[in-house]
Image (cartoon, rainbow, N blue to C red; front, side):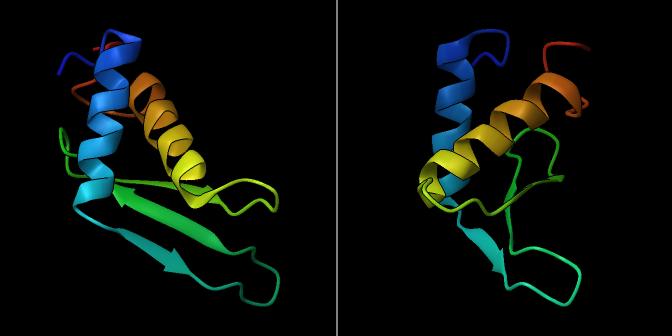
Length: 77
């Protein structure tokens, strides 16, 4: 699973979802939030819930964004 490629990032996102995700309910002043654990760096990738999008699509987008910008073992390193 190579985070430098789109296919590799998709495989990592599926692997992260297989390990489960966290769904935090909305609180006053904060939106509902979804989190998934990155299998490479073991940090949480999170996103705000958006209506009209599936949980899988949101988690995959959060993981892809995390791998591209925040992951210490991602392609930018």
